Image 1 (cartoon, rainbow, N blue to C red):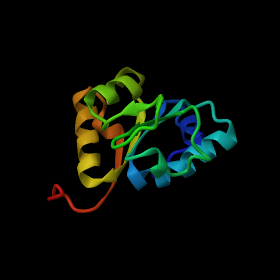
Image 2: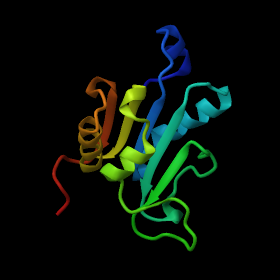
Image 3: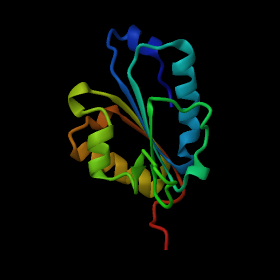
Length: 142
């Protein structure tokens, strides 16, 4: 993935950046979030991160207010985040709306990435603004 606030300034447009990660797909986004924080970037950035349990959260030392975590399997008592998988309603509520023309980056397993991308497009996001990184094969797990 390639994005920087400097690139936004170079093209004269400062668009928000939406990151959507499934499991270990958060790894490349941790560097982006860390850089964003260290630079004090004015570019609006959000990370929507799905993982199984609170113990499975990767990079908790980097994650901040820009991050919404969805726990799919177990939630600790009083869990303030999202419960369950990232679905259409979660994307519609937590991602930047299409009218803000965000640059969107999605990383995770192939089924996760394909679902998120298709749902974002269905919600009205510009397909040319969505970048995907997937791992695993394209078949559903058996």
